[in-house]
Structures are given as C-alpha cells and as structure tokens.
Length: 291
Image 1 (cartoon, rainbow, N blue to C red):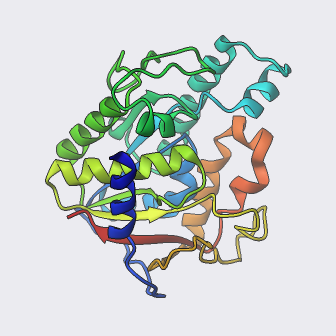
Image 2 (cartoon, rainbow, N blue to C red):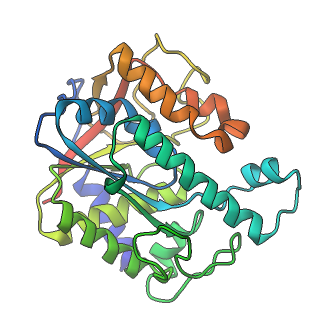
C-alpha cells in the first residue's frame, strides 16, 4: 500500500517542463525548509533563505536527522576506521551545532529551528519497513530521539511518528511555501523525507506550495564539482519532466550561502568539492500545490 502511495505522489508532483524564473520572497511570507541532514538547508536554499529573512519573511528550518550516520565523517573526526556508537552520537551533536551556526549566518532566528533527531540513513526504512514498529540505528544505537535540544524528546523511530511530528509543525507554522527534497533524489533519506513531507503537507489541510530541490541525481551532476561562483547550476538529470525554475543570487546572497556552508567543518573534511558545487549564480526549485 505504501509503495502505491509513493507512486501516486510521484505522478501528482510531475508538472512538465519550463524555464521560468523563481519569484523572490516577499515580506510576511512564511517559509518552511525540510532538510534531511544538517547542511542540506544551506545547499538547496541558502541564498533564498537569506533573501527571505532580509525581505521580512519568516523562515523555519526542520532537520529530520542530525546526520549521525555518516561513516566517512566519523572516521575522519576520530581517526578510526571502526568508530563506536558514542562517536556517531558525538557527530550528531557536532552537526547540530554546525547547523545552528549556519542558520544564524543566513539570518534565521534560533526559535525557528527544529531538530527532530531521527536516524541518519534510516528514513527510507521508516517509510517502508518501520512505519509502525521502532527502528534502531546501527550507527548511533538509538531507537528514539535522544539528543539534547530535539523538538520531541524520546520520540520513537517510526515512520508514523515522523509523519505526525511533521504534520504538527506544518499546522503550527502554516507556511506559504515548503522547500523539500524531490522524490527522484537518489539518497534514501532525501527520497523518504520528500514523501513524509508531502504527506504531512496534505494531511495538515493547509494549502502550502511544495518547492522541490535535488542533490543526488547522477555522478556527473552538478558539474563541475567544486566552487564555481560565476557558473550556473544546470537542471538535474532526474529522468522526470519537471518545471525547474531558476532563482538568481546576488553577490551578497552567494557570500552568505558560502559562509553558511563553511560552518559545516565535519562535512567539508570529507566532501568539500560536492558541497561547494552548489554555490553558483542560481538555485533551482520546482513547485506544485500540496492540495
């Protein structure tokens, strides 16, 4: 049944092709960014977030995971090829600190930041196998959101609970736009959050526009890897006919976006060229109604 739900959502959010410009943020708008891991919010939307805050909009960021399951980052930080569960949990806390610094750089107030603390690398499992029964992370050893500062302490790692929390947040914020991953993203956490976020938006009964972005779309994209501040981010090869809209960044937006990304020292140590490849003259979004 859930696979059928995935297929129906994919069909519903497949609007065609266009080369339109993405509209700038306006004063009074309420904008919610759903980020699978700490750093995704800055990569996808850092320039837009900074402009929204400067224009008088209200931006809220939700991180579904703390990013506590990335072996390369843990191994680099600990100098060990076999880090223990405590090392993974330390990485989660470190990435939460990095996320707060990045968000403040972009102008988002601390009271608009939500950490859910769900398992990095496990969101796909929560959607399929662990929607009702708890999942235990093989990395952190946790089966519930146990990090200090999370939105719902001790929330069990189930898909139903993640969807419930997202729905609760959407109902509370009542956003005009929700920025979230595209379901064609090849990363399991991104794909799953696309589904959970879309379901929460529809179940909230509030008609926000869903604005999708994508990172993992093939080994040759984005190209070139590394920083290219004068270059343009090309449309990703999703295999789907999307209406990708290009949002052009000013120099000050690019500078703030770069500064926010540079806050993620734990990730720059292992994937610097990939992160910096998203600091371009534009950001790409594809939006549809959640109704």
